[in-house]
Figure (cartoon, one colour):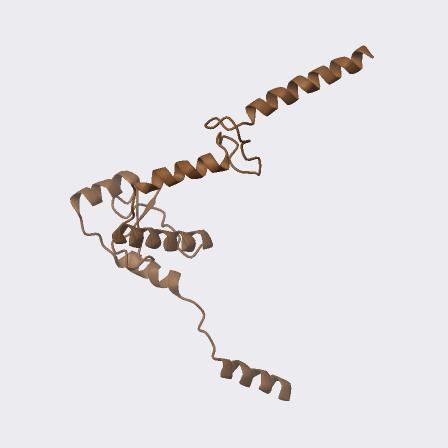
Length: 164
């Protein structure tokens, strides 16, 4: 009987402590989300939504910023798929190391020059013009796809196969 009381007591203490820890730290009313989101998140969904709305109110994205974001996103997709692969060395100092993408032209997202972070800052500060030859070759290699066949060609090939 005593062992059961201790077990229940410990369980009750844990439940009380957990429920206090699970409340939103901003409004102190709603429970924090427990749906696999960031475990460090301390606010409930409504408080978080209100904060994000406030934060975004004073930050508008310009057309130029949107163009740059789209360009970077497009290039990152190709990088994840393995179509856009960084070379072994920086294209400015020719030393190996961590490389970042640099877009000299945001209208051509696959035209990427790979630079060290320090070299990239130096290039952007100087406004230097980089040799785009290797980058142009990589752009063409990344964007090549197998040619699409027309529907009529597919049907003709199917009919020829069935006729054999």
